[in-house]
Length: 209
Image (cartoon, rainbow, N blue to C red; front, side, top):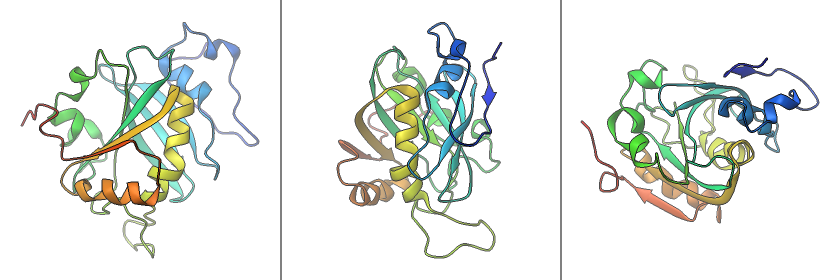
């Protein structure tokens, strides 16, 4: 029997047992079963239940050649389509240690989890990208490697999230600090992807610090 976390490594497509698609299966199992590869081959590798309502995802980015941690707050009714809100972190990408719960980010410093607990919205927070301005860098950095965040956030991640969590096609994106300008550039890079962009949302969420 599949547990709350699962990891896939396969070629030629993704296949899970039919039981993983059942409505009674844990949300991480269902999300992993439903997730589809992005057109370039980027894909969800793992999904696990984190603290509270948080789901910990591991997504492989073909553009960057590595995995990216993604935190998700599922919509209140995850059996029906829901819009998706992307939350981008500040200058350290949400953590200095690589573990989101150690850092200063939307989940640790705002009431976002409580605010969306009763709302039909899927909330997605990528972890990482510190100092990158979530841009596609022209050359690889000798220390931090290949940075193709614009490609990842606009061309790879959305289709994976939409398939895994029944995205309705209505997306919004918000960012604070370093990401407050990035959200505008991402919207320009992908016309029509977002219905709303929000810069520095402290007026919308209670800042806990």
